Image (cartoon, helix red, strand yellow):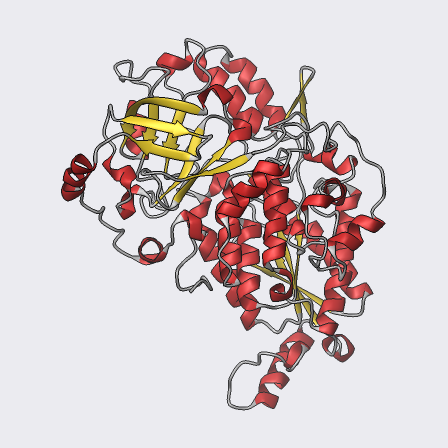
Length: 563
Ligand code: FES
């Protein structure tokens, strides 16, 4: 296979001319022949003024380039789609597959021998991994790193767990506008990704666990010197990979690596969004992500990482406590230590060489966990034949076994219009149901699953109520919230048939979510159901026609490697 500038030449029917032209343009940009004969490392940058989480991406790319050059290869930085949670209408999830296509196609079209993927904000690392796995080019991830925690009137604050907490207090009338404004300035005090165990931190930790990052990289803060050193070391390793041609993603993404990811996801009490992303990532390698295995390992995996929203600390504390390899060491008996990492070592090798220091307050010992088990559980039942998820670590144990009447919202617009209506027939015993907010229905499966507590209940101090939907939930949110109900309502799932007042039973112990409506009545309702109209054109049309359900990762069926 041709390497460096000789690879993937534009097709003019004359390869030597194509190379002559390509080199000519680069000579025009000031490159010497010596530089142009070296292996090439592409550095995929997600810098964008619309992505404040990635404000330091150019500096990360610069440090990676330094490492690439020091190791004798030639770095080229190139852009892709960049997604920020708060700058993506209607939701960044809608565009994750577009970014994954961009990543895959750019990797396949450019003359690269290896690629460094700079990611961070929630959907970026999943999209990068999906694209790189499909391209099967030697690839290594470096995240931009997390923000430092904020400080406000003696309290440490973190995006976005405290954004939600403060906003809920403001909605309930217990926090005045000027107080909210002052706290607002400290919620995101530096650049970087959200510094709690939200989706960005979860996916960085899982990318490292899957073997795609140099060990220790995930937890380094965005504005730390460690961040630049990891970036430089990533560039150096990428240059070696460009020379040797491996490891390729297909060598790293095995069933053992995915099981390890499930163990770590439970032990960090990570974001439920990871279930959808892991399914999509695994699907690109033709592996069906095993949700049953995730539930099984959860029953015996303690939550060891004491980070918000489940605990008290922040990513910078995780880093100072020893970082991910220290957590792996604590979980040694739960992990497959033979799984490979991009460094060339196995997880077991990394554990053996990693410094022994650990801060027990942040990375808890097995005999003193934050919670003994079951951070995330998978449910089935007549409401979710394809499965549903619940983050028990962020829920109210008193609601784990619950029966109550449904209060149904037909769409996000309906929810917004009626949730604070004083006439809404809702009590603390109700089960709030949101539908048509799934992959096809919204479309894009927005993070709307943590429905707001209706004002009439919140103002009386109610903090939690059972909620269920075909939507997702932010990793920084909390509540007794059943998510990812599949099949979704817009695909004709049973969620479409629920009516106000139906009794819904949540049975966490039995891992079920059911509605108590007899089959004849359900058949009557089904006969009246009509599928929603699909968007008329463009990417939205493609998305709605070809997106898969949550258990298959919401990837496009024609991109997934699943048969
Ligand atoms: Fe970018 Fe939270 S919004 S990581």
